[in-house]
Length: 229
Image (cartoon, rainbow, N blue to C red):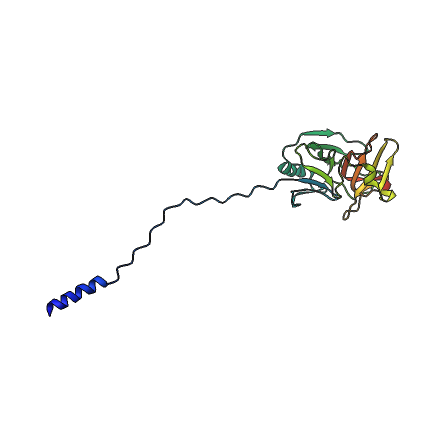
C-alpha cells in the first residue's frame, strides 16, 4: 500500500505544469534619430502693389516685404531667405528723390529710402512714404529664383502685350526720355502720396520699357505713374 502511494506521488510530480519561462530580454537597440525637415527653398519673387512675396514651389509665402515697414530690416530678412547679395549701391538725394541705398541679388534690388525731415513745398504732409522699393531688372536672380509681378509678367516680356487692353490712364509714354510705362497692379489699402506740387499719385507695380526696347526692361514697386494723376 505504501508503495502505491509513493508511486502515485511520483507520477503526479511528472505530470505537473512546469514553471513559466521568463520572457527573453530584447537586445538593446540605439534609437533612430528623427529626420529634420529641410528648410523650404525660395522659388519665386512676386512683386505686388503693397508687398513683394518670396514663395516656395508650392506657393507658400516664406517672406512678405511690406513697403511701409523698416527698409533695413527688410534687407536683413531678404538676405536670410535669398542669401548674400551680389552688391550694394548708394544714390544721393535730390529735389525729387530721397537719398537711397540699394542692395542687389542680381536681377532683384531692394532700395531703402532715406527721407529728409524737410517739409513739403505745399506745407502738406505726405500721405504715403514707402520705406523702400523693389526693382526687377531680369526674369530671375543670379541665384536662379524667378521674378515676376503678381500677374506673372516678367522682365523680357513684350511691352505691347502687357499694355494690351489696359485703360489709357494706366499706360504712359515719356517723350523726353523715350520710355514707356504700364501699371500692372495698383494699391488697395494705402491712399497714395501728395508729391511736389500737390499732385495725388497712386503707387503700384509699374513695368517700364526703356528707350529703344520693345520689351519690359524693369518692374518697379511701389512707383507712381503720371498718367494716373
